[in-house]
Amino acid sequence: MSEPKALLAVHGHFYQPPREDPWTGEVPPEPGAEPYHDFNEKITAECYRPLAERCLFERMSFNVGPTLIAWLARHDPETYRRIVEADRGNVARGVGNAIAQSAHHTILPLARRRDKITQVYWGVKSFQHRFGRHPRGMWLPEMAVDLTTLEVLAEAGLTFTILSSEQVRGSLTRGAGPYRVRLEANAYFTVFVRDRDLSNQVSFAMPSLGPADRWAAEVLRGRSHLTLLAMDGETFGHHHREGVDFLERLLHPQPSAYEVVTLTEYLRAHPPVEEIEVIQNTAWSCAHGLARWSTGCACTPGDSRWKLILRAAMDLLSEEIDAAYLDLAHGRIGNPWRLRDEYIHVVLGVMDARSLLREFADRPLSAEVEQRLLRALQAQVHRQRMFASCGWFYADLDALEPRLVIRQAARAIELIQEATGVDLSDGFRRALALARSERTGKTGAQIFDEIWASRPGARPPSPA
Image (cartoon, rainbow, N blue to C red; front, top):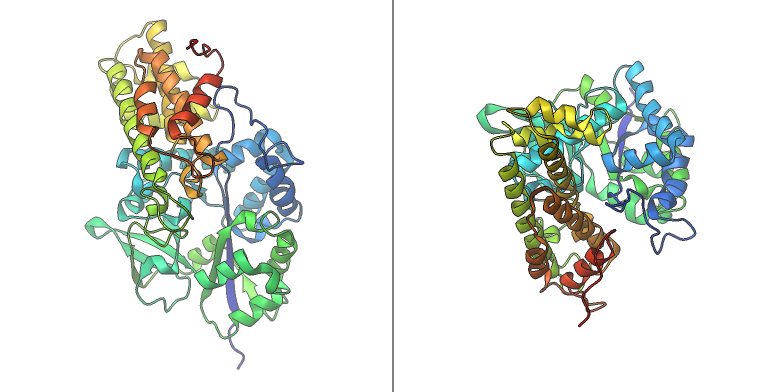
């Protein structure tokens, strides 16, 4: 009697931060992306477009972050269409293969519960807008997890996520699972578990693996349960030039070698039975809990204490923005947090901002008050964007990614000042002053001042 065929699922996490200038809405030229204008264009040419043209999204499990898919819809509509159609084709065959992602790649365990709710809700609504259906699963940015985050996912009607093998405790006798994780009140959430070693081989050692289908057939031999490879989608074509060819062979094996399935397809036929425990406040890309995005750690070389200072500055600024927003909404808006959540429909362009505001207003508002509230809501969008994880991921403060999040913070400060008259710039500048780049010597305050002075309509500094 022949052995059962091995089963393989491949998940690609496709994401780019909001690179747009928050004043113009356009992505400025980015050094290092040459000969392309910016990294979105470069990675689209190397990865997203060729994967879509070869119909590889159809055979894998995937998520495309809301900020990336919005950019693709505007700048490469054909690639966008192919990605959406890949999921729709699977829906027609039984179950879609795309899953959602929270809105701005925030490290969710480091966020307040109400911000977790907003990030997840905006991610769900963005997915529904693009794919025309409610998602079953959601990718957690950097796979950063705690039980509160899983509870928020469950409350949003989501049923599963993906974690890495080092983030769970228990016997993984069913390979990738799915497994059950116990939440409060005897509720459960479903988790698939990626094979960390094999996933990392693909991510970091692809050139040494040889033909993908032969490599997979060898490593899967004798496995009787599902094996999951999960990695950044940009691995295929951007991080590794041969990645597109590698993925194509990986997803099209000889019939006798192994079978490729998607996570949603497998879950439909194999509901979770066994229970495992989540190791809270862990992520797939930090060996020190969540320190890479909070206090700094040895995951990045050099003095990473600037990460703690940037995190504290952003946390303080977000509290101040929220306080100004609530002050403005007091006596006018019955549920300002719910209004913020529903503002995603304005961001997506499917609802008029003033119509939404009038739905939540306790009483008729003057045109001037409406305008102030709308500016405060737009400030909340940029306040969410300023926690994109890439701002803390790398080693240097004076680099593209930290500047992206500080730029979002600057725009939020300007909008909240226009809405309420409250100027938060001096406090933010002071909070950033002790953060310093080892490479250039610039402080966070100096980087903020450069951005603040370059914004449209900024007054030139007074002469000394």
